[in-house]
Image 1: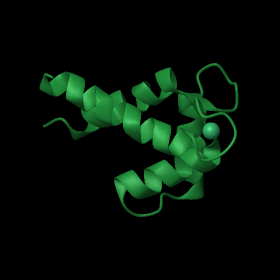
Image 2: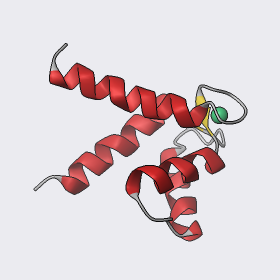
Image 3: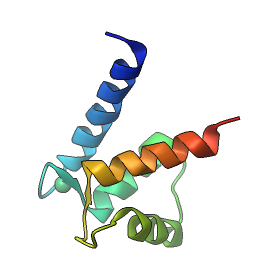
Length: 83
Ligand SMILES: [Ca+2]
């Protein structure tokens, strides 16, 4: 498998791990997203930041973050971390 497909597989794995914690296993609740950010970004983000993040990601206003919306988060991180 090429590196980029491997990377996408890993992103999927992280999403599934947290999305499966409560409710629908195909979406992230705010609580699941909070846990994901805490574990993956290191250090607890502020509630304000989480609220902002969640609002920004939940594009269709469904109250949960689906895989497509999560990919937007990963893409934003990639751009933020780009040299
Ligand atoms: Ca869920």
